[in-house]
Structure formats: C-alpha cells, structure tokens
Image 1 (cartoon, one colour):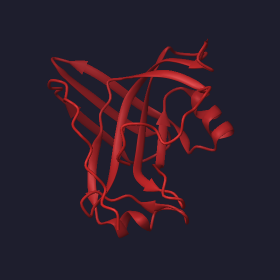
Image 2 (cartoon, rainbow, N blue to C red):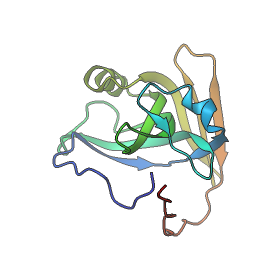
Image 3 (tube, helix red, strand yellow):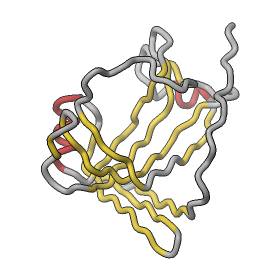
Length: 167
C-alpha cells in the first residue's frame, strides 16, 4: 500500500475520468475485525497495527470509454466507495470494496456486468455552500446512509512514504 508508483502498468485504460470534490474519511479498526469480512486469499493491510476502512464520496466527471468516447448520460455524477486496504496472495497491495454506489445507471450496470464489481444505484448528492461541501448518500432501497460535511483547507503537501520493515 505504500508506494509512489503503480505496481503494474496499464497500457490501454478502459476508462478515463476526473475525480472532483473528493473526500477520504477513515476509521481505524482492529485488523481481525476487518479480516473476517474479507474473502479467502486477501489479508487486511495494516498501518501501525490497525486496519482502515474508508468512506470515499466524490464527483466523477468527463468519463470516457477507452480514453476517447464520452460516456452516454450525465457528464458529472456522484459516486461513493466503502473500502479497505488489502494484500493479495502474492503480497500485492490493493483495495477491497465493500460497496460502491453511483448515481449513473449505465455505470452501475456496466461495472456489474463487465467487471463483477459490487456497484449499486445510489441516491447521492454533493452540495457546495459557503465554503463547505456536503456529501450525502444512501443506496437505493437501503436503510443506512451517511452525511459528511467538510470545510476544505489548503492542499496538503506530499510527504515521503514510510518505509516497510522487512521481517
């Protein structure tokens, strides 16, 4: 999970897009609590002995198929991920998505059909007012939702990644 470059290079991306109004909200858990939610073959990645679960609401914009063709439908739409950080059987890092919601029906259908990703249609909003951003969401037909209110500050400056101890 700690790297400045990708472990794998993708020669021809299937999609290109921009993420706007993005938030990462992290909760820390004991690793065993998250591990029991993962499928066999994945190991929860730890940071200082803890596992993180992240809610990531954002606005997707300018989605293009194969980098060229605009996606039919709205040019901008809301999406939310609930995810954790994992390692695969060969030690490669990745993400495990507990849920993915989007307001674009075509994205939901295509991601489920082509990728097998657990996308669901969501009732999601991203509102801006008086220097704050409100993210709200609920899965269509679901009973649990969220509301995150942020007041953005100045951009963070990159820092050097921590070194992994080899054991």
